[in-house]
Amino acid sequence: MVSPFTLFANTLPTPPYCQLCRLPIESSHQPDNEPGSKLWCRHCRQRFPQPPYCRRCGANTVSMSTYCGSCLAQPPPWQHFVRLGEYRFPLRTLVHQFKFGRKFWLAQPLGHLLAAQISEPAEAMIAVPLHPLRRLYRSFNQSALLAAAIADKTPSRYLPDAIRRRRYTRPQHRLNRQQRQHNLHQAFILKEQPLPSHIAIVDDVVTTGSTVGAIAKLLKLHGVERIDIYCLCYTPTAKNP
Image 1 (cartoon, rainbow, N blue to C red):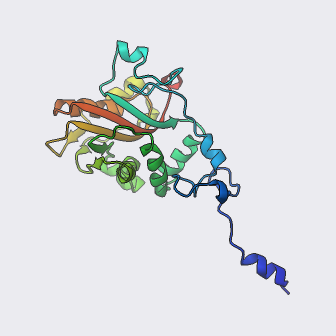
Image 2 (cartoon, rainbow, N blue to C red; image 1 turned 90 degrees about the horizontal axis):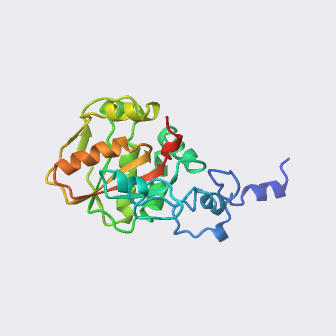
């Protein structure tokens, strides 16, 4: 026979558990209006890697700066870079869950956290597009979901049909720097014109910048004056082959 105490205990509300450390989330210490407060505990969110970085190219720096030495010598084809953090635990785990684990609902809390870092929102945003075959396999475009989530929290409007990928390419994360740049030659085409003068490109992870760089150059050719990059994670180039 089941005891009355067991019956009573089974009726008690179950506390939410952090999706990273699996420990109960203390609701008294979690402001309801903070993005991700229902998914991750305060301690895990404080571990999101957020080292200072260059606001032009996105590379790690000793302190927050507008330009770094590399930008002064060879500036990237965009003007401003905003990132949520560095591509290591626990953000790396979340990106893998979101992108490869098909947990598409993570786009909203991650996108809202990224939106909070944007001080001067672009007039419009475009997402790095997937080829239709890869879109069919994955069932969603993670960058498009992020752009829509950022649009919820900023004045920027998302242009879902502004750009498309016209050539199937090998996955960028499997290539070295030289192969990445060759892999993207004439891979994108703009569909929507005219475009506003200030546009942000949204991607989940930026490593060498080849993908967003190729799109930025294309936007420049069509008269866009300022280009920003919004991404969840940046991978230090020193770690790349």
